[in-house]
Image 1 (tube, rainbow, N blue to C red):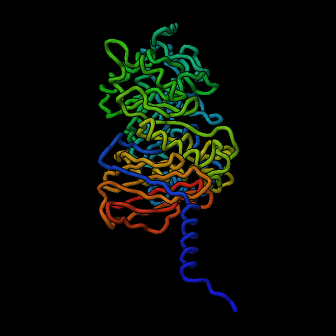
Image 2 (cartoon, rainbow, N blue to C red):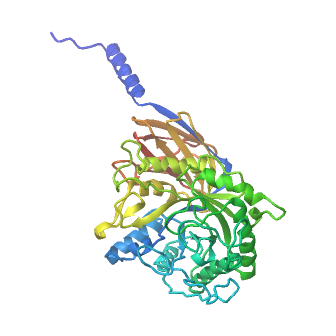
Image 3 (cartoon, rainbow, N blue to C red):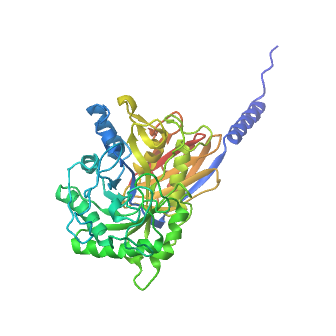
Length: 478
């Protein structure tokens, strides 16, 4: 006769299975306190400098429908990432060969004197950057950052837009043609004026890019003290122009390099730091992992994987430089540990076989990378004017950040760096019962995938599960 287990034995077995299941899926507690606020967010973005804008505009055959798709992916909040910052390159070349950016003053005055009237030219195109900026503004762009990699060569100590050199007139330079600082300041303001007269507003202005690196392309060297010499001239010129501009400095090649320039910006009876609105740095030589020594806003304005072949479908494989999880973590660290207010990748979209863009346009096909979706996990849900708020995780393998938007929505980013899924129990101080929470998942299988809606229970709590090597943004409604 077949024996039937007793009810008590069945209950014991069921309990054991339940305990095993709970033990098999680790859990983590996340706490969010919107009343404890930190830095204001200005946004996320990219650049299309060095003629990359022309890639988007179809120079190499990208069909019109895909041109629109790329613009929407980059700048439309509903369709794509909703980037709100675009970084333009102010050209310094007297031709547009290769990927050079045209100067608005390609040749010096006839007598090569900095005090002689300049001969400015404007083609209304600016290596494709002007029409692209127009399109970006139509999709809710908030900030247009015009940034010069170099002054024109005739204004510099080495007489070349490339290979470093210094702007003539700053400390410890000597130029037979004289001091070009005022001429360079006028040049930068004229670039802004051309844009404004054509109906596109430049909001931020910078005059240096990676001033520690004498590159074989447009580049210009500077110490902090030398940058301060020019900032004083530029600030006076901006004031006289009547333009509402936020001045930036100095796009150091790494966060440590930017930190090293700060003493020079603070020095003297007329500290140049007082004329700046934003301090800008890159992540190549050293990452943004600590706050710069300043009360000013800080932006991470350039960083990219410049080493690998284009890998669009890898959110995580082995922790490589181009992977989506790598960039999701970098963005989170920049905001939570370095207190940045903005984060910009190098190139938004281009025809390339490397990881330098977020979106690849080879052969007329639009292929977003997992890096792009990692950015979109933040940029779509964390809007300009948001405030970072206190957020903590009970397990360091699951990292968190949270931001309160001006419309009252709360975006909490949870990154699971582990090889197993985690059950998460989120407690948000002050959040009411029954609030809608919409999760969005990105990993190797999904791109900003909306998951089932969650409702908060008592005391503003909600539960979810984050798969291994994944990121979820939990967006709580107003």
